[in-house]
Length: 462
Image 1 (cartoon, helix red, strand yellow):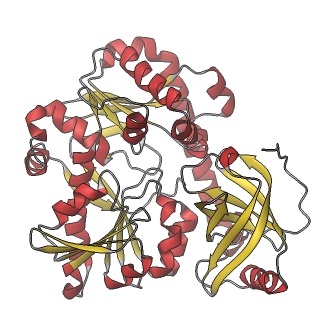
Image 2 (image 1 turned 120 degrees about the horizontal axis):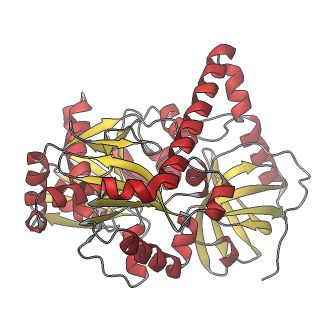
Image 3 (image 1 turned 90 degrees about the vertical axis):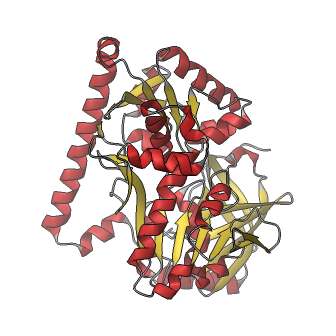
């Protein structure tokens, strides 16, 4: 595969967020556009694929609200999970279709640049919000740097019993520390202090990004080894998001003190499903619910939980090869990869690997649909704007407690918000491993400990 460098653009590109599929060497790769012109595009890969693994040439299908655009492409540059492409042999029909997308602003297609968005707001309001955001970032970075400089002393005082192991995308990491610090910081960096009724703990992060962990199992093994060596007295290590999957792929057995967080996430999503059902005025719509990511590690188990309350569960996932139906505890479960099935319900839970993975499904949401999201990384602002324009009510699923706080807070969370994967570690530390005997036992123990699910609006961190 030849090395590529970023070429000078011949056509002006516009920020356009569209689902698309790359076909290269017999593989279909799900992605989304970051910007678009009649000559090419910048593309963010949704599937867990390194940009270097994609062939130099292939075909691309761009999905728009008025139809699909198909053409050949050539890669012009690669960077982690982002590639730049040039359209080859694009027909005049395709060029006209791309120009129509760029020049018009129907649902889900074009988003002006951030600068243009600010022009639409009152100048003073936009200026104040910008200053507030910058001050918050500076405060968070200052707190982060101070904690890590003082950590050798603070570690003895805190004596953490719960360690919340997270990762971030490149963008998430920059929200905490500048690139120069990443080059000199230790392999395990402390990002926050956790104070709970029965648990003191810390949130820590690896210097490796999500993209690196997804493609290099040796870095996953090093992260887990470094964790246990850095905190030999910890009772529980809660693994965030896709980290349990990365660990299994790397040959790591997830057993005590490692916690995969599945019961905690199931508790948060099940309780949230009940809450979003209460938000619907049309109670006939409460009989069914959809799960995006139903074939995943947690989604597949959550289906059984939901069968206790809902008559129909629609599990949607591209990994299902054909549409099938089964009966579980008297409820009908439909397994499908067809996004059109979303039109059959007004309740949706999102358990995809990354929040922005829902982009190809957005056009199928019916207006008035209520969505609860539990993804890491979460659904980003451009996609949230698409959902709002589609008249979809979006909520973020968290757990909370009167006795819990995290300082500084996680990006896209509030101080009293507990991610589902961390909840399991907190409950186990407060009780014992008997709480894992069944989901029902865990749910009861979580409630006895004072934890409850909560639906919040997504903070504007990303």
